[in-house]
Length: 409
Image (cartoon, rainbow, N blue to C red; front, side, top):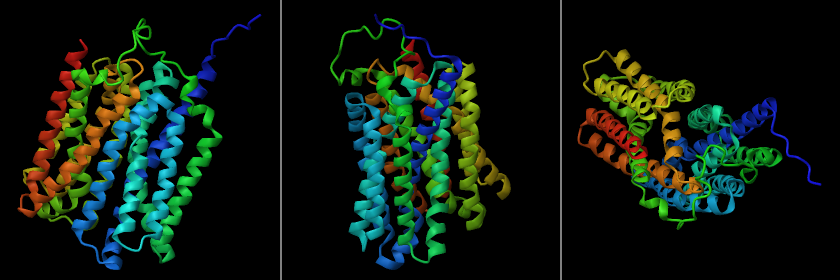
């Protein structure tokens, strides 16, 4: 006689949700941390290895090109093999990247580290969203997406402090990469210990519409025929430029437009990330209360575009300009959970990994292409153009989101 399967109680479901959200957030924060594995020590590499800024830029390009290609392929691998084993393989790549960076004796070693870090980063969005969509209950899914985005911002913020701090305290930059290797190892051990909470094989697509799971199987590439997939890709491509502008170029732009000091501009970048995290937190509650995802995205990104445009005008007081750039991060963060929910709704059943891998590759490609464009603007003495272009790109991202919403109807 087969025993009846009892439903999961509300307290048990809550514990399961929070455990999964926390562990996926830790993994995502780790992936963003390793985005910044090399850049904090660029000045040391110039001094010790005699590298040029063009060579250092190539390290960033290699990271994002490898990540972009691997993200699409990683989505297929997640759908085929499950998210959890791919997650541990990705974290292992971060360990190898740390070892390669710590042992590097020139450009070749750093290039290898950048490639390993990009490969490790590549499957994280397919991994994370597959686990969250399968294991987290519907009422908390918006909060899960919010926590996921916040963890990424915190990873970006923590990396420079961690890496530069160890390098300065030890007096040897190679010890910083011993620290990152230990960090990657610690995350692997913790997730292995808590592996049941991230086991997507035991989840179910409880949030799919009735009847979808019974649809006949299609070709693995069939989802590429959907216009909504490419609109989501375009959304990420355009929205990434604002992040690239602030993360990589806010310092020279604000210095030239408003004569802000290096310390002040560094604080602006930090404030942008923290405001983004606050926006994501509020956006998680907003998406749980509102079904109009495109409207949420449009409000957040249009406000950010306006703030960046005002800053680019050069007409503001320096302190007000710094505040405007920081608050632009809030608008982008506010739109984040609605963005992720919009992509979920655009995903056909059983193709979540492939869809997230494809659309999030727009983020990597946006970084790879926006950086040289903004660099050229600065070389041509057009600092305002950096923020004007990023504001325009946010408006194009809004248009893409609105078109996705129309495709769903």
